[in-house]
Image (tube, rainbow, N blue to C red):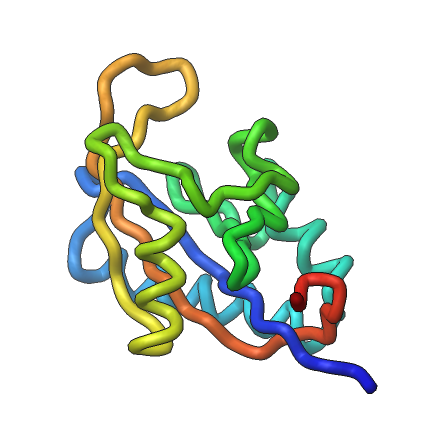
Length: 145
């Protein structure tokens, strides 16, 4: 018997770079990422999300994907996070951000989360804001317990 697993698709961007119009752009890109999963399938969608350039990358704005167990299934910027268990991943101030993302997706279906992150090549944390949206988007029984 096949089961459906949920994947969480998240877009992230640096807070100083956004305004009200940017929120709409980010939400649109999250929906575009979900549409890639639904129309092109899991593997092509993960390749698009994991690409350092492409239709889901707009400067500092990029998509990354997690499953509901906290495994990072695609990330275009930080190779060390790809295919890793990110359940215990903390931001620069100790917040368990993957757990927060999953909580938002499960309890609200979608929403925003702010957190402090040390960007690649930097030493000081930067305030980031991510739009989280969870959806049943592909059959992935190996992620189920």
